[in-house]
Image 1: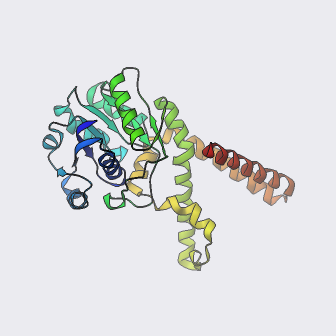
Image 2 (image 1 turned 180 degrees about the vertical axis):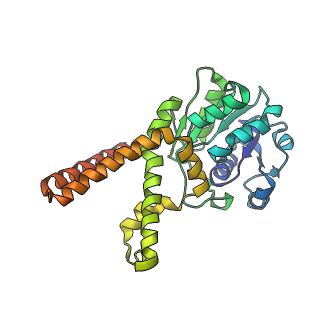
Image 3 (image 1 turned 90 degrees about the vertical axis):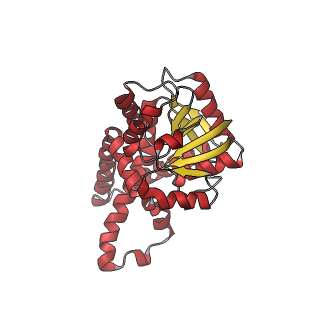
Length: 291
């Protein structure tokens, strides 16, 4: 499919893309670009056989590449696009793996004036608590959703090729608008991460005095798992999509206040109704996942 695939940001996501592409024979060569401070991580990627070569010089990394995927935190993408711009090739397909799409589009517009037609915005709905290339796996994207958010000017052939690329590494590909993506992901991913960070932060401060974590059960482990996610990445995501996240936080605060009032007033029937609705809503979600 591709002769030379360049991954910019060879961490969990970038490394897993590289592993999967190599395993499926989707590229003859895969290289990585990163800054000097990431040199040890890129050296490890080569030692592990995730990539063939790595570069700290962007021109060398991009030479003769026919596909470039930016897999860095979304907060750094504008800087990356500025580095790529002098070497932008209209014959190369460019994409990303960012968790917010509006910010990626804005970064491209700031650098190029408009989103180049050979750039295909993408977001794999996959991840893990650990970060770094040593956490990457060949099957991270298998049976996981991948969302493409093409614009009106996106080249159809580039879109079709990126669509096929993700399908061949096991993803279930969906297509939606940039705005719809950021609204949906704010509710299903970004807010839950904030809640996990907030709860674990609250209990962490209590644990320093009362050994809270010592007696935590499996439910706490399940709920708090995503609070182990990379803080830098989630800082970038939350700031990039705050216009969608802040209203959801306020709605969640209202829901908590309602439950608080039910408890204060001993409204057992309404409390039962609230919990039952939530349980049934989650079951609908599980049924959809099975389908």
